Amino acid sequence: MDIPYLDLQAQYQSIKSEIDSAIQNVVNSSAFILGPAVSEFETAFAQYCQAKYCVGVNSGSNALLLALKALDVCSGDEVITAANTFFATAAAIVHAGARPVLVDVNPGSRNLDPELISLALSRKTRVIVPVHLYGRMADMDRIMQIAENYNIAVLEDSAQAHGAQYQGRLSGSIGKAAAFSFYPAKNLGAFGEAGAATTNDPSIAKRIRILRDHGAERKYYHDLIGYNACMEGIQGAVLKVKLKYLDQCNQARNRVAGWYDELLKDVPVILPARDEVFRQVFHLYVIETAKRDQLQHYLSEHGVPTLIHYPVPLHLQKAFDFLGYRVGDFPVAEKLSREILSLPIYPELSQQQVVYICEKIRAFFNGR
Ligand SMILES: *Cc1c(COP(=O)(O)O)cnc(C)c1O
Image (cartoon, rainbow, N blue to C red; front, side, top):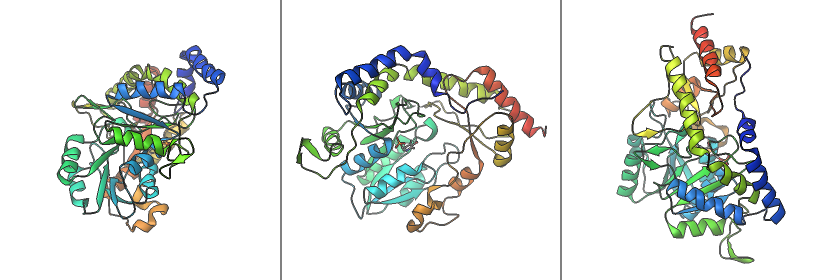
């Protein structure tokens, strides 16, 4: 059996006529940047996230950057985030002029450890950026409590957590603002680059709206130095159609995760933590084993592609040499980077395919 790591065609084929006509409408109207398709998506996505405002931009990376700028982050400030996140989270902090202060994660949740956040605070801390990694929300109650005590803003990195919940509250509705990515492989994926910021604060929404269009509220009158970062009309149109199916897709991912949980329960690998208060959306299904590299090689020889999210923790990335971190600074993130493996997961993955993958994992540990 040859199993694709990801299958973006399957969903497209199932809703092809709806998507095609939404794209055709944008082409017919020539509303290629922003326009009605983007505003309709913004309204629908804000409502979906139970947030008051949504501002569509051209990537998750820029959603992070513009949100940090709108939160008044500037040079000399410190912004706390997780050592095991995707590079873009910390790059946005540097692009905003601030210094990323990395914090280790909890080995069970693989998300920011609130105890360690407290130790990383300083007078310069301006924002905390919890990352809802792999589709599981960070410990938002405790993070919001710390932020309130110290009068710091929280920006959720929701790039992997569209529709994820923590105690019944949705990703993107809890922090001062949140950044989403609609990179094609994300749970809600565009047909190219796209992202959005959500917030309940009208002044932050307004600032992001201005920043995405070169700082001009009125064309050619620039109040701020902004960016060329508007969402494209075609992306808004595609996303608005796909948003209707997001819950269904997340449920299907959960079903796949349940099959993995069951079929791997007596295999010597660590499975994603399960916890009643979280509705996880399984952007990724990540297992852990000390034999990660051998297992990955074995699986690839048997038609099962896997990936590593991510092989190098941020403090050991060459680009962040200037932050002065060293090996050993974040032991949990370092151990995870050596032992994690992302198995294929997407709504259309069949039970038969999951059974095959799990048989191969079992065979590897049985020395066959
Ligand atoms: C994908 C991702 C981003 C960046 O989003 P882009 O749309 O690719 O710019 C940021 N943070 C995390 C955690 C991500 O997974």
